[in-house]
Length: 142
Image 1 (cartoon, helix red, strand yellow):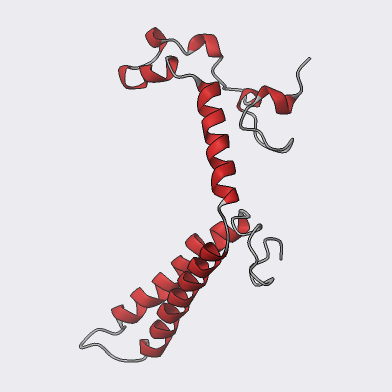
Image 2 (cartoon, rainbow, N blue to C red; image 1 turned 120 degrees about the horizontal axis):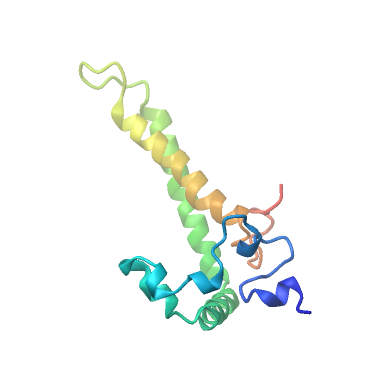
């Protein structure tokens, strides 16, 4: 009997989600062209095992290429994020015409927060920089 990890080509760990464990999963025999809508019929002809192998190989290739350039890029994004936040804080008390608030400050503050959470934190929390030497600056589990 095959183990759960060997049954799924994209699986990396026993804690990952397995689609066949879902109660409403569609059995493979129902994935035929006549049971699918016209725009989804391509999936019945797709070699999912080959696709999974290609994606896994691509992931290994990209992971092997990680290094100092990635850390420099991350630091540049953090620098821009901090500049936007600082500019937003510095201009928030400045009146802008008849408006009771400064929309430029709001824009810079929101851009700073959005960048910190959606770009920096997302990739750090998913382990995107685990293999890079960040000097302990961006640990995944803190």
